[in-house]
Image 1: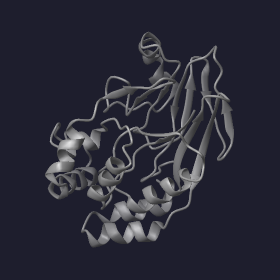
Image 2: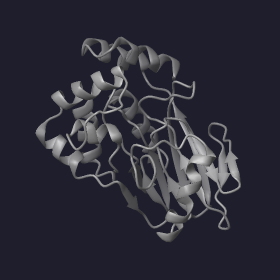
Image 3: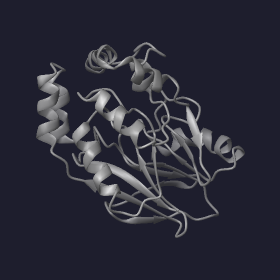
Image 4: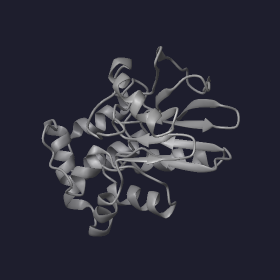
Length: 241
């Protein structure tokens, strides 16, 4: 089984289309989305429609929850707040309802999918120490791998520490260890690389791969400016920050 794991699309239509076009060439059996389909960028309805049309199993991210009215944007910085309220105003009622029905996490045969932690979409797993309290919970659910998003930065954590991964290189998923894996962000990378990121899990070969995809950043940035969203959101796409 080959899974493509995508996360933090953030209403970036150009990045999502580029990633899905790449995925369609790779012999993927199932695409899974770790949430935040909307927020920050200017194409929330288009991105939700694509995820719905392709029947991609998805969990609810923190921006998804705010955009559909499940939560209020308490704690959002001014830029994120402005974008969240803009998104709420522009989403169709049908797409808001679809977001409301998304679960906090999803169990698959080979892994658990979440946005922040397996129990809290708002909590960040920036470092190995942040993930430590959740290994037992994932194990109790019968999984040895948990995919998460939210930080927009690729990462691999195990009980014995953190692991790095170069672009387009593979990492062995060994049976004797548990792993928390972040595939990075499709729509707003923050690790200094402006390319869209996603992951591939090959369960037959026990391998994980981080993949980067070029997309028309300028087109996405222009769409943000035309929508009168904060200009900073357009600028950061060029920087991957």
